[in-house]
Image (tube, helix red, strand yellow):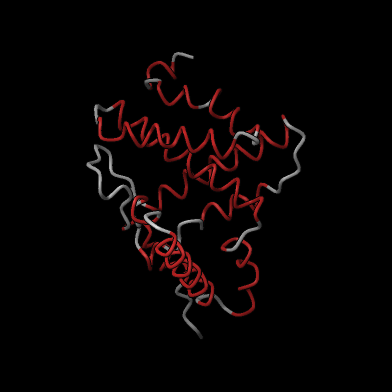
Amino acid sequence: MKTIFFPAVLGRMKHLPRWALMPNIRTENVHEHSMDVALIADLLCAIRNELFEGSVNAGEVVRAALYHDASEIFTGDVATPVKYANPEIKKCLKAAETEACTKLIDMLPDSIQAAYRDSFFPSQDIKELVKAADKLSGLTKCILERKLGNSEFGDAEESHHSWLRENCGHMHEVGYFVDHCIPAYESSLDKVLRR
C-alpha cells in the first residue's frame, strides 16, 4: 500500500512562522493563519450571497483559503517587501509556488488529485475572495499587535487598509466586513462577553 504524505506534509505548516522580520508579541504560524483566512472567507461568502445577492460556492472558497499558503512548506513565508521587490522576483516566486502546489497534489493518490486541483489553483473569482480574506486576516493581526502595545505593526496596518481600499472597493462584502466586523477586533473579551 502506498503511503500518502499529503496530510503529514500540510501539518508542517504549524512550524512556519509568519511576520518573521518583525518582532511579534503573539507569534502566528501559517497553519493558524490559513484557518483564520478560511473563517473570514466563509463569512465573506455568506455576506456576498445573503446580503448582496451573490452566488459564490462557499465550500470551494473555503477549501482554496485552507490551502492558499500551502506552498510555503517548500518556499517559506517570503516577506512582502522581498516578494514584490521587482517583477522578476515576483515571477520566480510565483513559479516556485506553482511547482510546490503541484508537488503537494502529486502526493495524493492519482484518483483524487483532480478533487484538489481547483483548491490549489482556483478560478479568478475565488482567488479574489481568498486574497481579500488573506488581507483582512493580516489586518486583524496588525490590530492585535497594536492593541498589545507593539507599534512595529503600525505601517503594516495602514498598508493593509490601503490595499483593501484600492483592490476591493468593488467587493461589497469586504466593505461590509470592514465596517461591521473589524471594530470588534478592537474590543476586549470582557466587552464582548457583556453584549
